[in-house]
Length: 235
Image 1: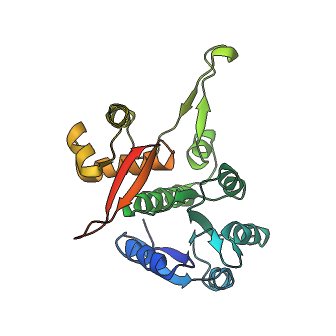
Image 2: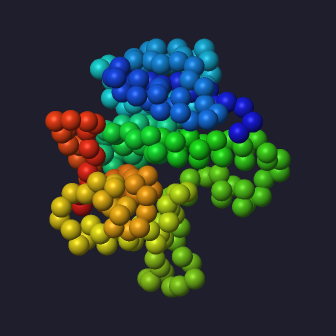
Image 3: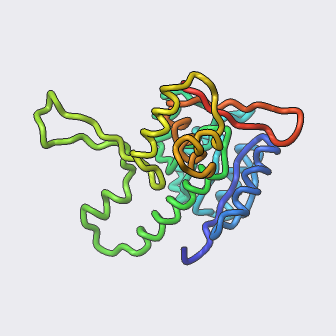
């Protein structure tokens, strides 16, 4: 990317905000310009710094991130938003999409998920800045592609094909689905990677994607020694 993406974090939990800050420090081409723990401070930081991107929590003591998002849109703010929330209600997702979020990430946030979202956003900005006269293929690559319906068969047999995000391959995804269909036990990324012949990091990326689509549930086990272990089980 040609220049840094300026980012504001809006998260009322101080520890979670610090984790997001450390994640951003590991991503090339990103510059954190402010952290807000209240909606009012978030609005002020966006107004003053005019960042390209706002990492926005939804639940605050005095309101919601979606309320702030609607206010930013009403004020014609050019800041894009990635909503990072524990809200799993479909209505919350639907409202976020209507309000124009760039990405919707479910907590607990993991580095690979945030990194992938930032990289997608960087690619989006680069393509947007390089455009002059639009053609339909340009529009298709910029607009959110959530699903596409096949028009080559009669309507009654039309199937819906889910577009997979960058870095997610359908063949590997099916392998992991088979692993969990054959097991009722929770598994960690290292165990899944060994079963499908992939690295722990690769397995973790697919597992987190499946958590986001609610195919799997993530569990955090706290052992007596070392870091908490993240395990996955069929939803």
